[in-house]
Image 1 (cartoon, rainbow, N blue to C red):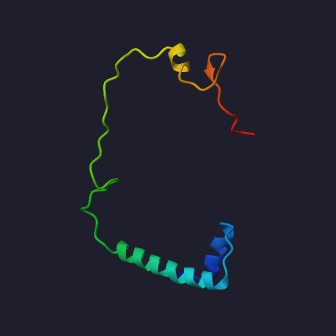
Image 2: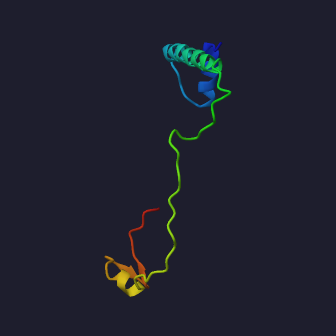
Image 3: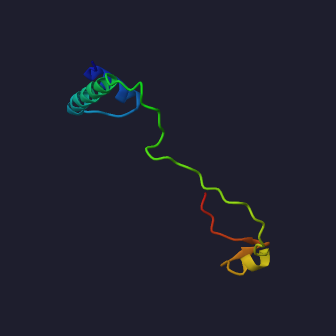
Length: 94
């Protein structure tokens, strides 16, 4: 069983301020969650294979091919501003 003091203690660890009515409501909610988990623990799952996804996933790989790319001069043609062969952008970190 979870007590209201447990909820307040966990909230204090997480640095969350709870009013008394919130702690009371959360205690009831957590009790319901723990009851549900206890129900799930009673299920027989010995024949169920563990899964990480409901659907089978497969990575799609493509073959790497060397292709020609744009030159630095061609790329810099589309830039608004450039400086010493690079894009010049506004400072975003102070």
